[in-house]
Length: 85
Image 1: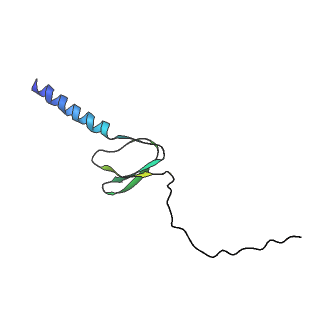
Image 2: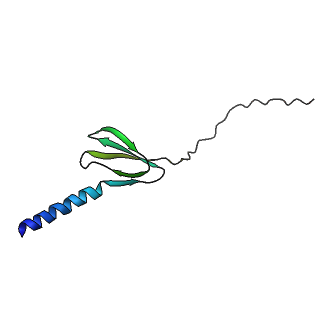
């Protein structure tokens, strides 16, 4: 009976580890994956499975357009004369 309980606990832990390593990358995002500390691949949109304890999501990058405010730029504009026939 004790062996059955231990087997059930091990299977539950194994199932949790497997399910936690299935990732869905949302639209307009990319995930950078490191394998053993070095760059391995970039995941684009979709369903992906990473290797437990070996692969790591090192960065979640948004691919959306970002608006940045710049201070006003002052400069000299040269006007081009218009020629009429």
